[in-house]
Image (cartoon, rainbow over all chains, first blue to last red; front, top):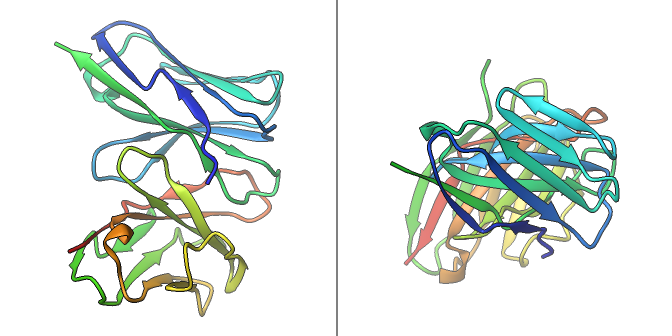
Length: 112
Length: 114
């Protein structure tokens, strides 16, 4: 099935650094969501975006809904050890809360 | 606040056996989704229910896969005659119909087919 393209695939950063990642699609999505997944667990919802151009924050996390509706961005400021994990973007083609199409993931590792 | 729960968390089976997984959604959520996640990939949609009605099942991987939600509460996903390629994490999510697109996931069931 279709998957959204995320970049970078992996990131190695030091604690305290800021992180940026993005997600692109060939299709227009009406909703973008960002999830974080720890090993052996299900994805946990971080941020949901509903409007083109929207910028939404959740603590140290900020996400943006691209104005073309074909992309989204996630920034993490002042990274801490618990930020380690895999970050997935997901898009919903409809407003109607139906199936999500997920990205390929960005793996974040913090170097001691 | 009870989240989505899944049972079992891990299942090891031999090729050819049938397996069944259970998902209990968040209590006030009337939509329930099943996804499959293979190593190194994002979750892939399989099917979803609104109450007891299965609204889309075209993405179920083959006729060996079936899902039910008989009373509109918990759901089961069955895989018949398992194959090694069925080894994956099976994730369940729930949401409120007509509301936001936010889906909340359970911890998943990890299936290993030997």
